[in-house]
Image (cartoon, rainbow, N blue to C red; front, top):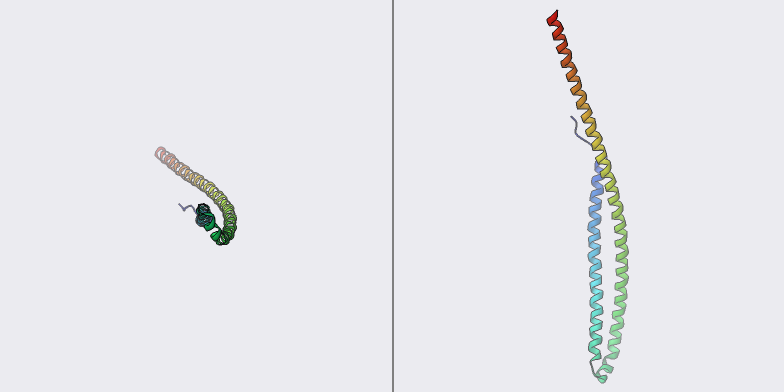
Length: 154
């Protein structure tokens, strides 16, 4: 008997590889997002700690370092703004990859369903062919028996 060969198998294989690739890219984006969020958190914590430390200084010491602190905090705020923009960009890329992955999964599921249906049709065709062959064999055997009986009688 011939093997089951589905014409769209190559497409299904490519779709599965694409879905795995998209999952890996999505994982990489998630790690980048986590790193940027971690950096934002650390920078905010440093500013908070510096403010607390600055608040504990005497007025004279505070006045001396206030200008430097304000320049540094302004630079930190700019960097935080840049990090937030980077985070927004990464989140946008992540949403796009998630949409692309959902489409790839949908396509993969459709192809898998079509393959299963084709396999079921193939199995039923095989069963019909086997049954037809068995019927023919039994008819031939019956005909031989009938001929053998007629020959014995004659």
